[in-house]
Length: 51
Image: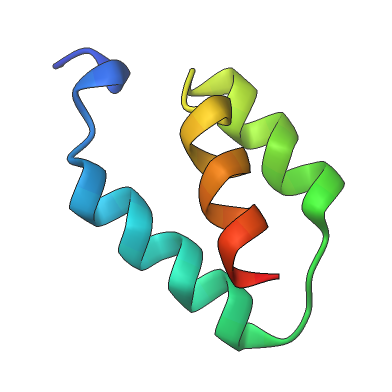
């Protein structure tokens, strides 16, 4: 399996956009997952733009 750090940035961006549009937001859980996948800085930056 490929390293999780090789997630396409466009995929991350689309996932965050879908998350924001969904309405039910649990940013604490989102950031826990982001830390687990080692993309928390990118997620934090994108969430700041859309929230």
